[in-house]
Image (cartoon, rainbow, N blue to C red; front, side, top):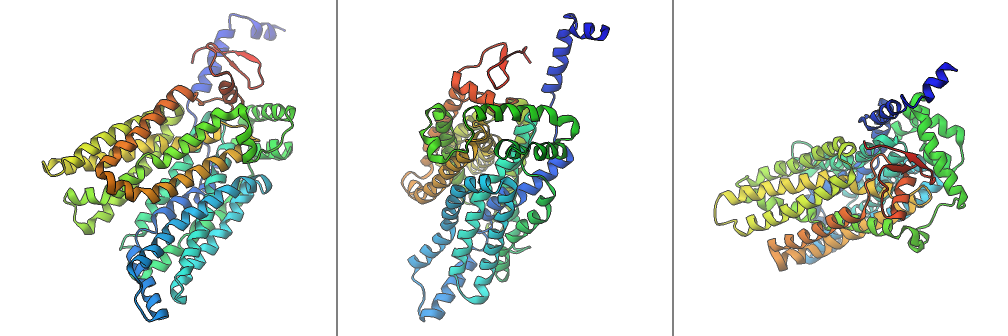
Length: 517
């Protein structure tokens, strides 16, 4: 009784609240199991996307020579230059078509097969794609490269849709942003790895290009070996399947016995809320017709399209020219390009360390504003390129500054926000919509960008500056901060349109006492 009186004594209540808040506010790091699960999910997921975006660049000339020789052997005449350009453009762009198809079916597969099950099955597509591309040279059939690129695009689209779902659903609320940054880290890691593998010292020589394209099977085999040792998403098991036992077992394996109770409680609240509404995973068209989440939908459409239309592709397009103007020998430019990949990779890691301290809103808004400034500076330095020998070096600095700004904000936070703005029944459909917008925007910018450059030259960055500024303003005024909040709390903030000072909700409408952190 004395103990009960001591606990209920109002003299000690503030101390207990302060201690709980200190624990909540302290930055935690993933345990060993969560780190290994992240690696297992990402190596065959978003790593594949990044790897296959960059690995195709190194063998460009060799593949074109192979197409020319094959065409000559078949038809006893050289291939026309415009036909060769069309063939190469098809090889590059069909990856985008595959990605769009993949992201369109990824959400449905993640509901039917589960997050983990979909990732494992997806590796079969990657292995078939690697086999098809690897056999193109010995069989003399260059169309196999097109088919292989379509298949690996399909694999990448499914991975980009499902792997972030798995990653953020296994993460504790306190480090959800940090775990979600695994998506960005492995995308940039894949880009960097593809650039390194394409160097002449490794597989960048002409005789190795079929092997280089076939190396996409290595991440697939790695995931097939490692991921089965880890459980299915606990949130999927409980809310989608109603498997309480499986959910508890998965939480204990991932979080440890001591830390799984609060996560289980949050999931049960979300399940109860959605059961009240009659839980059913929504289809994309049902999501588009739901007026209660129109602001969330508008947000994911805007941030996913801006991720491709913000000028990052233009920066990479101009990078070789800028490096040449700065006096870097042409044979050394590929190493400078690898440096840009390393820069983006390091920035993604840095963003992962900052996201739980600064929050999502600060990083993505700040990233877009910095990119706007870089666009202005890059336009000026490119305009006065011939005025002084200093300007080429300033242009090179702008390239790295833009990539750093992109990696610190939009590159990493976009996927996390797409995940956090929706509850369990809407999340797969939201990823299908956001992913489709992302791939369509990538296809759109790849088609019109050459014409923009021809028409506006370096002034095209003023267009990208406008896009970055408008998106930053939208995020600043419309999107609430999602750090350390449950999915129901975030949804409630969108519904009310404002956050109540000095109090918060438990996700089911009950007001709880809270003090400033």
